[in-house]
Image (cartoon, rainbow, N blue to C red; front, side, top):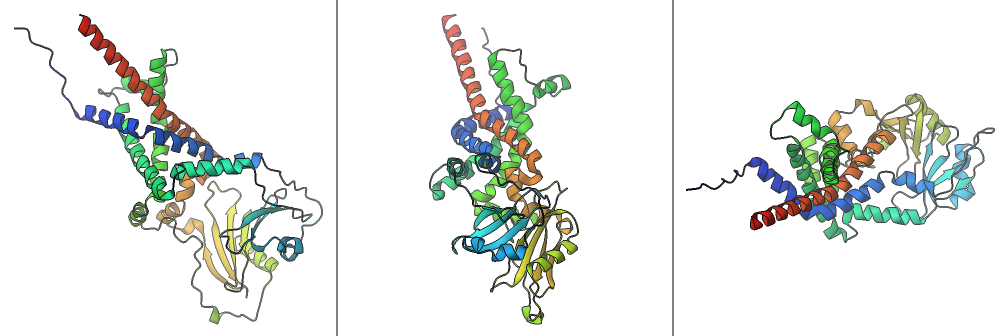
Length: 387
């Protein structure tokens, strides 16, 4: 009696491989679109600025008084000036936040030459519309938010599972340095099928950590329950305290004394005594407080801002130094720049751009691997049938 060849046992690795395969095939198109739009959005501001007029600042003479800038009829005609950003670089224009409509949440950003008072209004180009479409693609797949947001969220969860299972499958069955080493490089002198396999396997490994970070943070926009759960886990509220004002008992302040804008800025720079970009939010009738945010020129992080609030009487009512914040609060307040790659400026943006670009390619290379295996199985069946 001739014994047939026994079938190999279906183990945990085979199960992980099937999970990786079928989840990848089901979600491939959505992951491709989300990663593609995310890749483009990584340098959104830079791309938009390429197509816009640049305001040139040549230091000449003295800068215009900030009080005169605030009271300038041309600026006042634009709307309500709410904030001014003052860079330490003498060749960089001031940024003015102006609410052209009281219903606007943040207003529009105007550029101003501090030496000549020349003002440049925000410019609308076709690139802006394209980038907004990419934003809607990334967040909602160009669908209604009610349906698009959870679909992107589910696809993100699947991508996280794919990343974890992909790392497990990256390791060979027998973990030895000789076999593991092959997973670190792309064999460029091999046939195209092997190159495609290495592109999926090797590039996926290198980008996995950043993809996991993007996925974990990205879910904060898709599911409120997830965001609240992550806040509880971290012990600090994600997206919390945005625009929040400390409670102050104004009755105990000397309201008869009033300081001007220049005096408030001088006090802020004396308190936050280092070179950096300073943004001042102007007081109003409801909130008679100058709000300051300052980030050092030599800071590696774009979120390492110190905050200061000075009452119009000249008394400092709130001071928040970024370096003194607990680590969990720092992370929770930086979820957005951690997700977008802005956290460490241009350096981290390039890393995210490459990781996102690889993420865009993974559904493509993975699908090609699947069809190559189907063809191989089909040939094997035909050869067995004719034997």
